[in-house]
Each structure stands twice: as C-alpha cells, then as structure tokens.
Image (cartoon, rainbow, N blue to C red; front, side, top):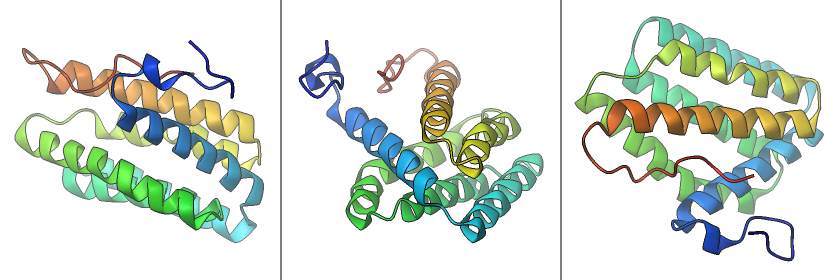
Length: 165
C-alpha cells in the first residue's frame, strides 16, 4: 500500500520505528551522496577500512561502535542536522540492541557485515544517489535477515521480515 507521497503507508508497517529509520537514513544516504566532498569520501573509506580490521579481529562491541561511526558520518555528510538528530533518536536503539544481542550469544559474521557496507561507500564515492540508496536498503535487508536468523532462535523477533521499498 502506497500513500500520496509514493512511500509505503505507515499502516503497512506495524512498527513505525522501522519506517522512520529506513526512510530517514535512505534520505540521508542520498543527500550525503550528492553533497560529499573528496575529503569526506576519504574519511568514509577510512572508517570502512577500520570496520573491516575490527571485524577480522572479531571484536564485536568495537565493531558495533565503528559501524555506528560510519552511519554517523553519512548522516553528517547529508548536511541536514535535523535528519541527523532524528536518526540518532531512531537508530541508536538499533545499535544498542545489536550490541546487547551480540554480547549475549554467538555473533554474526562481522567480516561479512563489514563488507556489506562496501557497495554503499563505493556508491557514495561515485556520487550516485540511487545506487547509494539501493546499496543501503540491500545491506539493511541482509542485516535484518541475519539478525532474525541468528539472534531470535526460538523466540519472536521484533524485527520486520524485510524493509519496504
């Protein structure tokens, strides 16, 4: 079901928290891609390389923090402080949830998760907003699927089956 703006109706999602996170971050990704400077691209690539190194070292909690750092950079590069503030309010709980779940059970493949961010970084570097948005949404779908499969064995998952497009 689509509303008059062309976006999925909030009635489609039972949990509006996910709608906010998905759409705001996709918007931030597109805006960052349009506005990113060469220096900011270098920063983003550096954070991604650090993510990969931390993943190789299997440092789960540090990985979550570095992953959040990558997302925060993208929000900052969007040039919209209000979107960044709204994302902090809506996405921080997702990262906190991830950190708690990883600490309480066998973590998912950190290296695979780190590499899942590469198409996003590359699309931002190429200044292709559509490709960046698609890379973000694709990585988000994979993350949700991974979390549902590895962290909620035998219990109901608060995560959606997949994000809407």
